[in-house]
Length: 321
Image 1: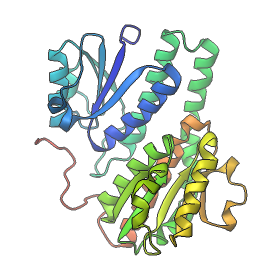
Image 2: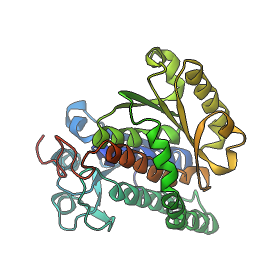
Image 3: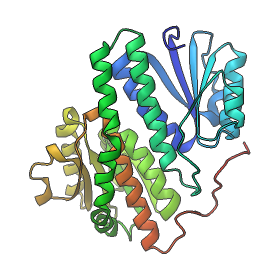
Image 4: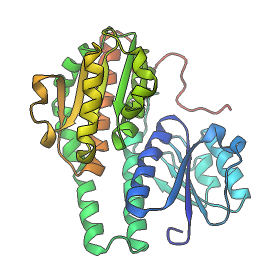
């Protein structure tokens, strides 16, 4: 399955799709394969290029997401092999797919997906490691090193959780916002798409994530002193570019909160409100950063007096198109 495919297509909705975007970045940088991430709701209507050399990966916490189920059926009818990443055993998508990987996250009761997202990420990291090894990109030692770094995730996430009060302090900086921007580049942008969705879902703040290099192509016109900005800086090769973009929004009067990898923080605390993220290799920094952003959304929602587990207008399982 992993050696024969020439093209990968990930179909998912919402949070699961954001996990797919992280996988896309990893597949491109490590495997150098052609990969695309498609919104399952748009998949059938976008005339996707699918054939028997395509591996379609369907991602869903519940396994009942109707858009994702229909997208997978469409892909199978065109000869693609389908792998499902699912949390609920025996669900519709699990039954329909050729192969299934269960995330084993346990029941997730809250509507806004959190642990399902981090377990979906973990499965994608394992898939990339396996594909890299089976396709000769990684040797045994490289594969073991990659997996060892992934195995550090629980201890790193625990460090973030132990400092949740610091995130609560940061959350107060954006509590009164009507609009909020999140900016980052590369994997940082992928992280923020999910962070922004979480904030929208549970705090009802209008939040938008932007690839920070795109700001000057339009969105920076919306930056004022009443528009706080959340930035993530976890990729060392992009750090200087990201800091430049952060300076741009600060110079327009925005209050900026920066979630930054501990080893690259430097003197930034003198200029910005920062939360330092425990160090992992750059491609794994998604994992601690995602927990920090989930906590940010949690505290903003909680401090506003909302029901964090049951946001308005949303259902846990989306079974209508």
